[in-house]
Image 1 (cartoon, helix red, strand yellow):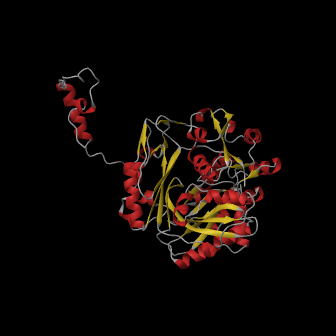
Image 2 (cartoon, rainbow, N blue to C red):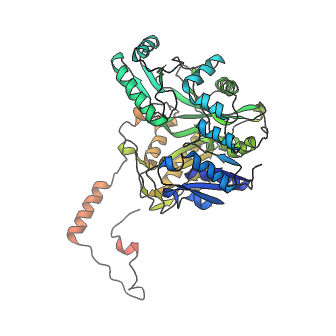
Image 3 (spheres, helix red, strand yellow):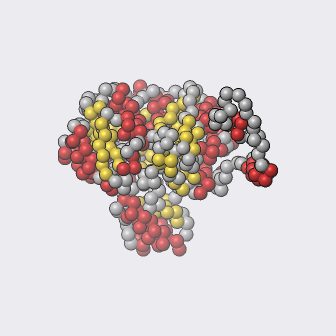
Length: 495
């Protein structure tokens, strides 16, 4: 096992990885930028190495600096977390060349599966069902128009070199195709340095279901059951749960076997996720493979009792998987809510700034993977995720109630968060009934605004108080010269 690893990431995922390393007696090295000098992952690590300015290209995306930091600190391996360089085949290859263990799949696998059209070719060749569409990227708008006609509208334009909604466009009529192709290619080029795009048939209102896979270097591959990730905004997940409310034992077996076929066909090693779309007729289609640890991995940990980071480290150090597929079973129900610094009233626009105060929820079955603290400044330069709130309970109904309680207890002031929005989603009839499709937010919360039942009364009370003047409280006794307490200075109030 490793004696020391460098974590090439920041925030809550860096802390999550450190927790397991510390349990295993492995030394940790953090890296940080100017924006993260006082970040929790820096304070918690055994060592820390400064990378540079807050600009990602000068810090968390700078391969030379991260490799140098690993060598300088004596780290034997690098865990990339997710985001930044986690799915960059050049970085994994650099680690291989420099004699540093990359905790993830081989660079060749990342390269093949990172290119969506190559991944589709691999899956088709090996009998994994894929969404009808192109298997090669294209730039000629006439060829794209011919393919769209064959598939039938609506079609989806997608970036060949990346995901996360970048370079994705829904096209419903032939007249919109050319402009959408240009726009998608430009966005893909900016996001991934590769403007290649391709077409897929658009699957209306599917469920987004993924299977966690683990594979070692000895040819052993297992899946760790499914996660449903259909509640999304701008093609980004915000609520995940396991098991899926639509899953049956028969469907789980078929989809799980397809996930294993995908992993074996690509020569996969370490942790990954095979993602599918499931239509309303029960047909499922391969979407992509995420060649890294997923943001939503904690819910799998909750129902299986496994530590996925520990498994990653064991596999990367050369150990075989300690179990087989028949040993895997799930128990209970788990839900994760992503807590971002963003404003759901303003199209989920990022809301960086200072965390004036925070109070985490607590109680049985509640886990909060958190990267912030009171007084921390959320930087504008990086993904605005603050924490992942996870709950576990015996049933889905109980898990929903537990998550609602946890969200109501969660206090973060100073920046906008979607906590109130998440409460409304989980409290909705559609969610409780498991009607969770990828169009859920657009269908049920298209123009969401929080309820503010007392805001008008509060405004009137404030105006009256300012006009009338507040009656000063007369205080006597030994505490008369102290600062007034909130009970004395608030005036009329109610809980």
